[in-house]
Length: 287
Image 1 (cartoon, rainbow, N blue to C red):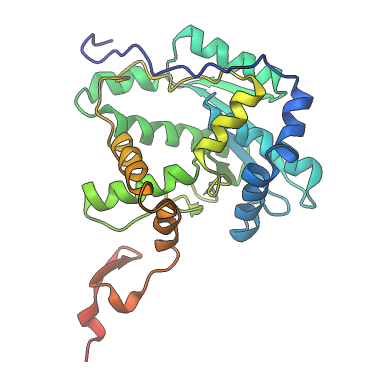
Image 2 (image 1 turned 180 degrees about the vertical axis):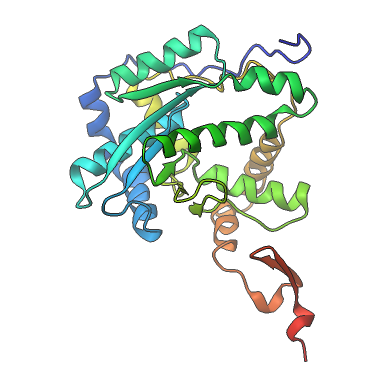
């Protein structure tokens, strides 16, 4: 692997309490973090019809804090909910260091998450063909590998652990760096894998609450796991986090306003937009 790109990995989150039993962790989701996590999970599931009767949902399990919580949320929903659905836990290894691979497997074993573990070798491929800007290609390839495995296992949906902060940061990144108004959708049909949908059940859950839950559980989640560009590629997402944190000092609800703006678009005040691949202008119907 190219020495110029190989990173030492991202910061590891170390809990301040011992690892709790899986029963205690599961109980905390429903009780201790009912308002911050469970209720917001249920809100997204119901608002966007993310989990429906007869679904077979593949869950992308990276081993990080977000995906581990997503697995447990769906497990609890299957137990306590009134919708019958099945779950496949898809843990793809794009080329993790052995310590990260072991941590992923150990955490899933402790949490009773029966993963299907498979190799893809994506890190090596990305390092070889995209040394300048590897992150975009890597994310695209990892998503494709998860879609393919989900389809192979008969899933009709693929659930990913993107949370509230991911959504609003992505929205700002699109405005500032792509010149487009676009957000992460809570539910999205795949264009390349027929019959598959992407769902984001953690759409309303804040990252700080996920961190608190993870620490309360005593879990040591895997870090980003990147061996290609960790700490080497500037993070636009980090810039957005810092910007939002700064703006919240003057307006504590700024993050909620950013999210709501994607739910409250006034088409009478939009100059141009795209729909189904076609470009439109306000002049099309202007009189």
